[in-house]
Structure formats: structure tokens, C-alpha cells
Image (cartoon, rainbow, N blue to C red; front, side, top):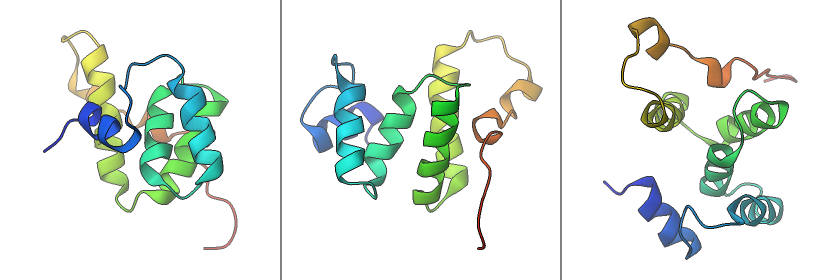
Length: 106
């Protein structure tokens, strides 16, 4: 399976750690709001635990057909940035989705 970096490079023809990716992804998501990979990569670029992150997480979760897979992908990034010593309780933290509120009639 391809890594996030190679998927990003294949889709957008630029490296994942290039300068200006956030603004590029914002433009792409404004022009193509239903393009799930762009929404996902914009979410990964957004600073966690902010209102902007929570709003982007809600948009991305709506477009992802498997919320467990989305959570797994986000936790993979978070775990790679954290120190290795971590309790099982911390691993089960679903804080990425704690700010998402469903509105309207479904």
C-alpha cells in the first residue's frame, strides 16, 4: 500500500512537505469541495485542537465513507509525532472527533 506521502505526490504533483501546501489545499478544496483526498490532507495540515481543525474534521468525516479508517489514518500521524511511551488509554483517545457535531436531519 502506498504511503500518504506518495499518494499526495501522485495526486498533486508536489511533495507533502513543500512550503505553501496549506494554501494550495485550501484553494483545491474551495474549487472541488467533494474531493475527499484534498479535504483529508488539508485536515492533516491543520493545527489540532482548534476550531479550524474541528470544522475541517467534520467536513472530512462527512466525505469519508469509513470513519474508523479516517480515525486510524489520523492516529497514525499523531502516533508518529509522539514519544514512544504511551498508555493504552491514550491510544484509545478519540479526541479528533470530539468537536464534531452533527446538525440537521439525517
